[in-house]
Length: 75
Image 1: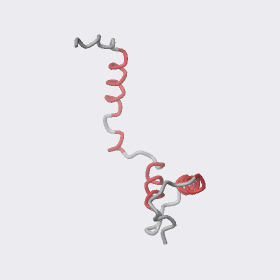
Image 2 (image 1 turned 120 degrees about the vertical axis):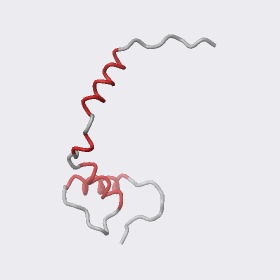
Image 3 (image 1 turned 180 degrees about the horizontal axis):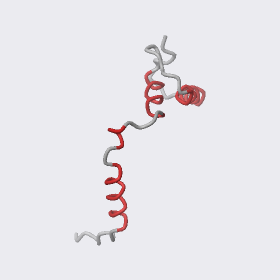
Image 4 (image 1 turned 90 degrees about the vertical axis):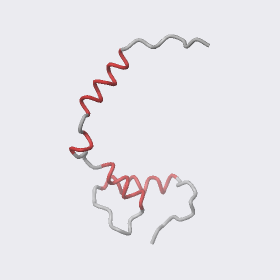
């Protein structure tokens, strides 16, 4: 059974229910709402593949932020 199929936005109660289910940490079953499965996966720990290159990415962001902003573009 799927509790919502209207296609409309979730109300606050439904949003809270989905977040609570994701925070519970129990693996969602095959009949679980797709958004609940997504939130449960996102709430879990990162895998090695998901964080590969993180140090290089952080260094690149820091370098870009430290660089002076480009001047105005001529019209």
